Amino acid sequence: MIISDPAGYLASSRPGQKAEKLRSVCVDGSIVPAYVINDQNGCGVNGAACLAAFASGGAMTFGEALNICKSIALNGYSRLRGSAVDFYTRLGQEAPFIRKCLKASSVPFGARSGLFVKSRAVREILAGRPVLLNIGISGQYRDHTVTAYGFEEWSVGERGRKVLFFRIRDGYSMEDRWLEYKGILGISVTYLKPKE
Image 1 (cartoon, rainbow, N blue to C red):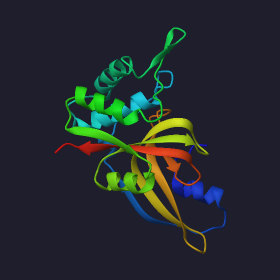
Image 2 (image 1 turned 180 degrees about the horizontal axis):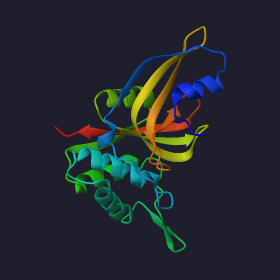
Image 3 (image 1 turned 90 degrees about the vertical axis):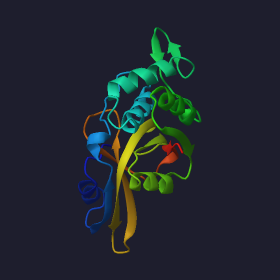
């Protein structure tokens, strides 16, 4: 299921329930590159390139960052499947892989991963930095990595239940998409850590 607008999604998925936007925060989308994945299992490599291009502050294009990240992936983080390169990044390898990409890109950031996804992702976006969300299974994605660079919180129904959506680059379209946080099984966050 694709969510292109949280308000429309809430109206169709929860008909008759009042929905009110509580807050909306977004990193400037013009500095978080949109991308379409063209490689087998390339979501992690493309997400790493998106963070590296962002962290370069405009000194590097997404394409340049992607070439660096693919080169690093080919040296220990990917494998051949038949005659094609499979860029799948194994669980737990996201941060070490992205650290190498960032170092090779000469940007002033490292990377860390964690399981406290909601609080860390919200904190990073509030600080003006996108994050990678590594999703096991959700109603929208299976074993996929997306770049989150914004979020919206909504109050839904008479009891005002809070619903959180992340604004994402999912690699399937150049358009903005949204990820409903509820109902995801197995998720971690990989984020930029400024070097001191």
